[in-house]
Image (cartoon, chains in turn purple, orange):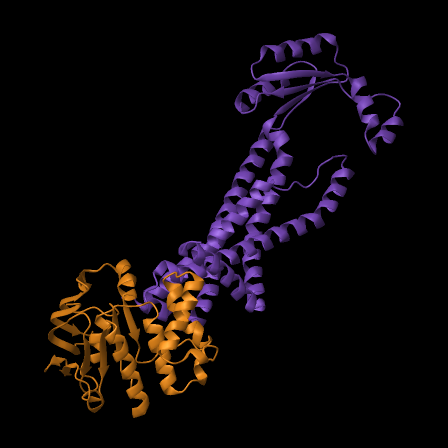
Length: 302
Length: 218
């Protein structure tokens, strides 16, 4: 094995041994790093789920036209013609009153209530899928439809979709800022953890420098320590989030089921977890690098 | 000439002048004593050679390299060509005698088997081979100093520099240390020893560099 590679292996092994020698300090550092990472990570997971919920509205804007119960065929055909003429309409579906009643009878909870009704209270309706991103045109269309005869109600969720989109962007920005601030905090935590290690090995570092060790040689074991601390902290953060998600998942699906939805808590894909671990490892490495550099600077390279 | 100083001055922040206009040369294979009262500038002089400190002015050549012009990243390689025995020893007390001698070899990246062989050879030369498993704290003053010498020579430097290696030693132990230095000198190592003990070294026929208040007097 060449000397450089051998020193890498030795440094890595030695730093793991050294970390293991002070298990309490190690555990506290891992918890500190883990919690600091879990905060933005948890925020990210919550936002993604919120986003997934909102996406249906966000990505597929829908417009519903409800007719008055006494609307006849000519009025319905007029609206259909208007919808077919308008731009921005992706698809069009007519839901007759009978159809609507059948659908509602099958749904949980309300079905029994509806069954007791003597007459059908539901109106005929058009459900219109719109092309996303053309809110202005859709609003004009909604206004035009409202003015047509026997149209009781036109429901268009643009404002709501816009608000959700804005909130999501704001949330992502906040989580991003939180992550940036906590990244600085993580560098500080590893900086300090490695500084304590440096202080206990001050004599050895000084001697190594005096007998011709390069800065890279002196840094190496500490860089491994910082990176290991970052990685372990990252794993702790992942464990915290997975644990919390596990606890929340049942509650969430219970609530969703009560609303007749199949919604389940979504977890980020494996690639995102890997990114988190890589990020925390790099942060730990950076904290260690800064710490050793500061020490080397203070003992003087010359 | 393996070491050459020309008009070297060393002034510390605060204005204290440790060395004033010092010039001399040492040939390869020489054994030279640097003497003078304490505070005469011996330690300052010895710290300039491995680049631990830098001269305020003047030029300093080692193995033909101008130390003042050396870049920071070249300094470690300069230090590997010089064996240092420190005034305050700098032994690692959490390691055995053997591991202390192994330390410089790991810094220079010797393969473990070759390093162990060299470390034992160095310990053998200073008569500490049977104490290789001991902790430095259990050694006598003379043994500690011999351990420092073994550590200094284990990387086979061409220059050996010792700062007050006989301080705090009884005269027998001091004599032993100087004999070890002479043995290394006889196999071609250039040896530079600083000491305030003029009487001890006057028995040797070696050249003497005498400093007084930072000036070279002879």
